Length: 89
Image (cartoon, rainbow, N blue to C red; front, side):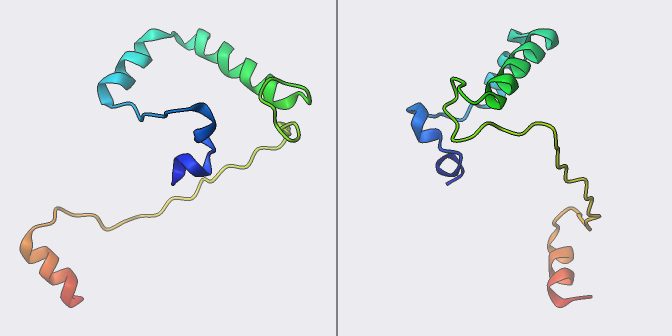
């Protein structure tokens, strides 16, 4: 569903990489090379006639961030703790 929403079907077959593949990818490019690629991608997204074929160029001046934090009551799920949670202690 997420791949459909992100329109990844336009790219052909999309396979999600595993943990070891991500580790290999991390070691393939250094930080400066990756920053250069991201900068080029952002420039392409901001241009009207870029190779990304966007309906309209991306507006990069404004950024929206979600900085909310929620404190969760997470604990190891032992049987008695699950029963206690189910009863509503």
